[in-house]
Image (tube, rainbow, N blue to C red; front, side):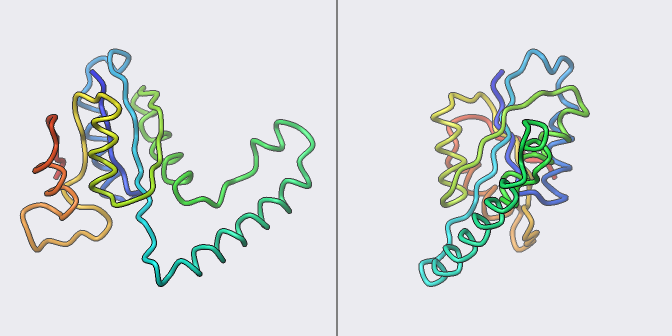
Length: 159
């Protein structure tokens, strides 16, 4: 079975990943992909996004000047939020014996999850009831509601 597990890096997403991982009696029988979607930055804040990216690039360039071996390169910690979130999620699933692939996309979260599910030929989407916003105005969070409503494949919502 090909499974798409969604994360936003929150405590709730980590619980969702752990719950999803416990569902598999034999993790080697499944192909698991962890997806993090970086939300698009609103147009009026694009300047700050560019400025931040410039600073991160400078930081990486300074750090890379001290790299002489492959081991030195492995020890450099990325400041990219999506990399950190996916790295933590990957390590969490490894504790359950699941060696997942990771993927990051940028855009409208619901559209990107649905697009990834369709493009990747997944059989199941696993996601949390709420993301980091934890808004309890409805039975499901906004992202989960839209994904459940529009998905062509089964969606497992973890409470």
